[in-house]
Image 1 (cartoon, helix red, strand yellow):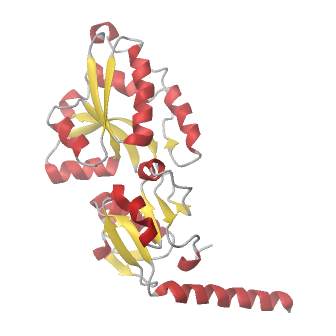
Image 2 (cartoon, rainbow, N blue to C red):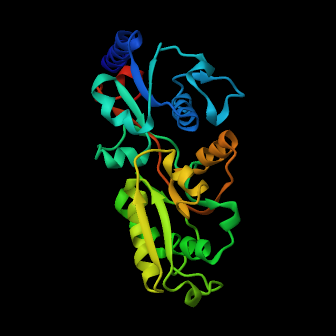
Image 3 (cartoon, rainbow, N blue to C red):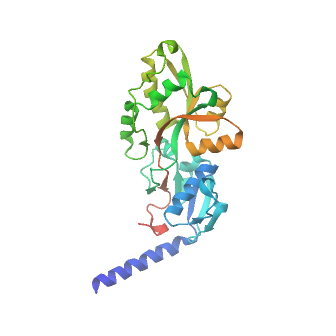
Length: 276
């Protein structure tokens, strides 16, 4: 009997908490096409909402067909989501921005086995060049794979067959003295490139790294020829960018996944969402 009463009280408490927050739960999400869709798919996977079947990875709040908790979505630039956590109940944040903001672990993460692999991209005309092959071999090295063990699941290597840092088909002697310009965002992208820089330096190749904090500059600089490669985005974002802007950026290396997570804002746990 005591166990039954305890179970009933627990159920009542859960329903009370859910009802208390149902009219005012605010969740901040990225406002760009692929990352907003990714955030909404994370919530759908938890049973918190339902999207139109055809919405896919570019879903927006307009594609929500069921929202039983009446969640209010605050759409902001991806990089700004950590900055608005104090004003919302939760924020769904890309791994790189969560790391840069030095946030604690998320309350929940998407499945790391996802299509959102962070990639190194170049213009299509350069994809088979020795510069591209040398850069790819460096970022797909065992040293880079080992580096991701520092992230405790917040960033996960997807490299199945790491290199020793080099590509046997590349004429490194011909590349000696050359500079490869790469534009990236901060953590972990710039740190991966710092490892690649040391590897390429062994062959007298200079890797020039420029760090930015937005999702447009890296693609426009590569497209315009102001940088050879970039490393900041996941594959679906790059594909959508190409489709929307007529660019021809291609992947030369898929390096890691940064599981998107639901982070605590004004709520310290998942009780407001009826989750454990």
